[in-house]
Image (cartoon, rainbow over all chains, first blue to last red):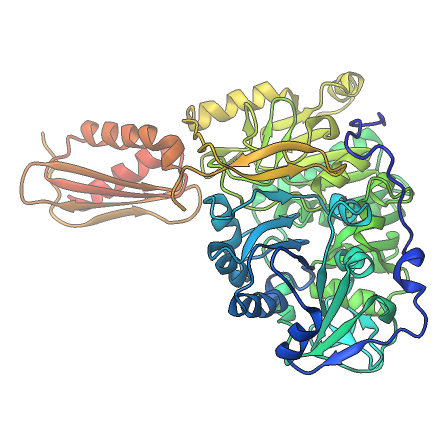
Length: 499
Length: 89
């Protein structure tokens, strides 16, 4: 089944991963400096115009740290700051304000939604933003392409000497996977915490931390469960999930040793729930589940249906509870998760990944970054990483939702190249990438699955919806689509539609 | 025979894939159609056609037809318009 490589890497030809040991963890007698307030902090870090600062997004839409820092930066009237955030959520309104005022002139992120995505889409950010993948972000930091001057790390709990844990504290969020590269490679690391207490385990050792600041609150852990982390109740979505399990079975992946990842979309989670039943009924044991971990995966793991969980980010509080107590629920860094040059990265070991799409085209290219109107609505996260690494990448979606077809002639924006996608499961049939010609024949002969071509799905959608008018963007490039090898595979232009 | 509304008629919901149609009487013989849609940029013309066709078939006069569309397909739009018109008579 496997074809390699899915795509030739283009950008970094001689990348040698630096090891963390060479960097910071070898520091001896390192002491973390403590500051009492913002004034002391900014006196110490000497942030200057033109510098690059970074944030992680494990508190998702409950994060208070980025706004806290951005408000201070706006107040100090700094200019030309680059913000390298692993993801940006609707709560991050202060960053949007900073962009509009020219305080921030570039954003580098793997995902953005809300006010920041809107100001970027409107062309308000001076330099084109860079939309990365989670694995690509780790590569860009570790390879030195993305240089971070100051990393601000929201730290759910710290001990007095400055070690950080994501598993304790008022805003425990579990894994701190996306902050690890920042912690090890930023010139200066500022840890911001609201809980100082003895720690059971460290996610980031004090050797990486330069300064710590104690604040009242780093955020609301209820915001961790934000956006799309609930299972669909729509019978059509559930039927798509059922067919997806049938497809996985027909292709031969439902067997002992299965490694699996699913996105947090409603239908993807329904696939996880139905996989649970299937494995349980047939007494099948998988090897690992990875990615953003949800309660659905934790349930399977705790029942012994998966041996291990590799967790780069907890998507809900059930996952946080599990990582606190379960030995085989491992926190991993973004580099271990999806850096293509990390020889043991997890995505390369995946059998099946279930992903969503806002558009998929006749060449199987997928867009999860913009709407048809070129407005930024999200981003790859781990989409492009897992699609590349996994043996079988399945997109699940209703064919038509609110008169918009998921299948299009050509995607508005390429997030994930079609060469790395294997199948699309919809309520109007399953399209398999034409390079799997033998599999297509086999499925048609030996199963009752409705296997159709992508063109047939497009025709069906056009019949239902009518032919859509195309929406052309303006000239100005507002963002670059950086693939996981750091090559640019597409651009996003300014949205024509008033937002 | 012309159909003329005597009261407000509403049909449909504001759920995704549906539309809410409100028909109200006017003081003259005019027919005014107003459309709001989440997919106006892509399907504005088709939606207008679907509403127009239905109103013509029903021989509607003296009415304001307001469609608040959340991505309904044409058959849904036509059914909602027809029901709202009949409720307004």
